[in-house]
Image 1 (cartoon, rainbow, N blue to C red):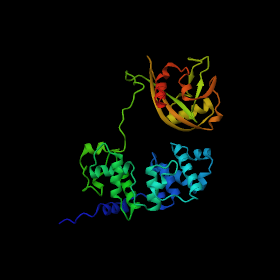
Image 2: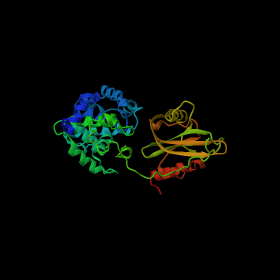
Image 3: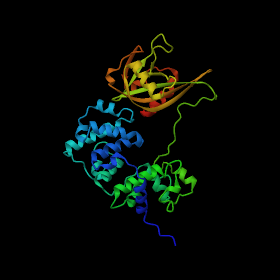
Length: 371
């Protein structure tokens, strides 16, 4: 007779001892180090995070150092990692730890969430990995593993998955167990091509072999929503496309606009900084170059905002608009225009933009809910 299966905890931990990832933040219980790693890992792949994590700790070894760091220096250290508002939130949390908690981090998820910028996931991760609290930690990987293994109904109820995960935590080894879950979701129970034959829970998984369920549960935390189309793609296939990038630069509730030189087409109209993407450039590289050439500003971050197609007889101009932040916004210069201004959202919508910008204005109006 076959040997009886061990408990799910033992099965997973046995697998983890053989296949777990060797990551630098798994070698510490320092809550600041854990908070830094969790902040960096949000929406960023592990391989990209490791060198940034190590560099940051060399410059800012503890919460006190990060709390008093110059914001511009932080952004330059963060550059290339994306979503720079993350480090600003962590800095505020560290400042609170230093001032209100005398440098001692709270130890429970409830107390940690009282720190500015610390949400439920990060609070639970710090409580688990720094203080060994047996609490639920739910990220996309963990949600996917539980959804598939236990046949949880889709769409997934976010509150219920946290309750479900709380019942599964290993009471004596929450750190290894949670790390194992994350590794299982990242390496085996992946979104698109799960390697079910290598899963330690293969015989327990209610979704094993169910292709449709595996596909539907690839990202169970994603909230389905209707996506509004602001610009239809060109009807004629094969029409040459000209890629153009535009920077919707924002700072303290205002946006940077430039006035086109009078001698150019649409002279006198207002526009966003940007221009044609050159061969071999990525959108981000083109944005950085255009911003420097036109305004003297150094690009800090760029997030997709809207894509607009301006179809003509001979070609289609593809306007890729990014919501951007820059270093030293007060140093903007009109290097390629008749003038630049910082305007609030209401004034932005009153300016005369070229006709092709209509879809951009519609997206901007919806973004700010200006009706």
